Length: 125
Image (cartoon, rainbow, N blue to C red; front, top):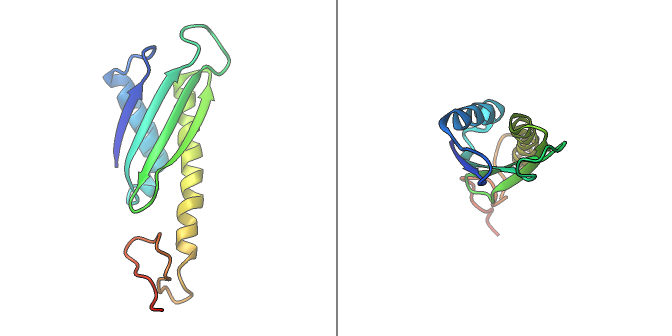
C-alpha cells in the first residue's frame, strides 16, 4: 500500500509530517492492505492561518484493486486530529465495502457471479 501526501500552500509537507501521516494511515488501514494499492492524502488549512474550530481538512482516497476509489473527509482543529478522524472514517467505510464483498460468497465458500469480486468469473447463462 503506497501512501501519497498532498498539501495545500498553507501546509509545509515536510518529511516529519509525511512520516506521521503515513504511520497513522498505515495503522488504521493495515488489515485492508492486501486490497489497497494506494492511499492519497490531501491536507488543507481552510482558514489559512486564522484560528478556527475545524479549519484543518484531511481527505483520504483509497484505491482498491478491481474497484472504484473510495474517499472520506474529516475536519478538525489540528492536522493530526483531521488525519486520525479521516483514517477512522475510511476504516469504517472499508469494513462496510469489503464486508459486502465477502457476503457475496456462497454457503460453501464458492464464489458467486458478482463481477466486483476480484478473480471471479460470471456464472454461465
